[in-house]
Length: 592
Image (cartoon, rainbow, N blue to C red; front, side, top):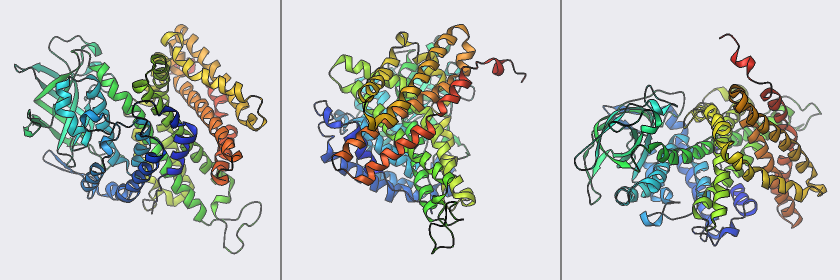
């Protein structure tokens, strides 16, 4: 049977020691985010995930969903688990107090999201999408729409979904055909079909808010003619009460590789009553608010899968007896040694540990920067933080989801034949993780976004928010003997990334296919160096804590994992650079 334990101690380390949240106490929302609240919140969230959500994960995967004439019935226990989630106040965690939220920073929401996704990713999609819907409505809707729809969304009694994809329009949203016809009362009638709508219909919430991309009459072609609309499953009265069913419904659910307990719906709109969100023809700008938040959240989905896969691989490797260590018997009183003694098994588990702990710190740092974008009083700080978030969002989405799938596969490998069968649970993680590399923009699209949109901004302005602090860190600790094993490889591989960046920039102008053909490799290089920077800083903090008499086991493990990352994972940048700079000729001229 699989197991899961919330990594509360690591969250504490990252939030308190690595990110040093105490320094932001004067910023709105952070005053209550100190140790006194943080630890109880993390512990309570961890307990809820371990005891309520995790036991439903395998059961939900096996039972699946039931579709009955437009209704979707979740697996046994899911509706009750969602009620527990709402009663705990988790949906309102980081929302505006004006609408019933608790006003806490997003950096404290990310640990909750990771733990939920580790415990039960199918369950996690509904609150995750609702939070994205909240962001879009909060930033772009009129005050009247906010007052009418946000309180119930913030409380979790209603959920939210985004409705983009159509049968003929996936990545290329300029091809959408859904129409919005104006009504006399200022609303719009939405007609069309949307597919792949996660949680588009379910029986856990009283109401579902649909954020829909559609075209107004006479709208320009392409993405410049798309507007964003809000439609409610049930019409909502001026007093907030639910009325009759809107003219929208679920005509079917998909049968999928994974996420069997999360409904992926086909939604039909037959003149559904909706309201414009933001300005006409500016829907993509509003939707990207939701999508960018969703991309960070999807990255955390990959991280959540990686963490639970790592925990189960480690536990199995310590228990499974198989063969003797090649250096001699370790447990003479046993018929064989545990497989944790074998070098290749250790390599796989350390890879998983380095990924999970490094990506956790990276994701929380991006979340913190996003908080600074919206909360810091200094405009220059907000701008620099936004540059960082814009640059790292495609990196986090792609690398954490690629890695989540890879780590789940490593967990299967560690389990051997038992990993391939359902009893131990890790094969489900492979199936569930696979979609994260596809939805909210495939990882190839993320790579094109990085090299085609993010790098050129302001002649590389975004890059300065990344490279300058890293360079300053290397300079600060260059002459520290204890840090040499971390700063030296970081300096070398940062140089490789800078070389790749220059090559991409030059080829993007001269030979666009070269930049496009190397985009995925460049994106992975970027992630590897970003994590090297994270690990070097974690090692430095751990050394300080050890010198002050801190927990030798915990901080010693941090330093050891950082050392493994620098020696065994970071060197992948060398082969990626060689492949990237080989150009695209062999790709584009091959006969296919």
